[in-house]
Length: 66
Image 1: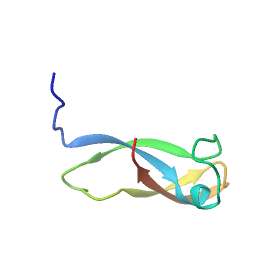
Image 2: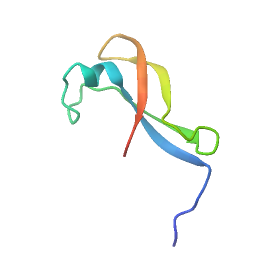
Image 3: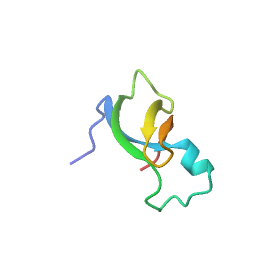
């Protein structure tokens, strides 16, 4: 079957301060969230303020590729 062209897609959000801090991307020390976005309303990359348990504060989590 062909892939559907639904408006809502699932995206991964990753803590930007953990990545900039030099932590390896495959390590467990990076906060990641799964959420959905509407492809038609937000065609660009999604950035949300979320809590990072590794930084112990609210940081910006940006969308990454799967």
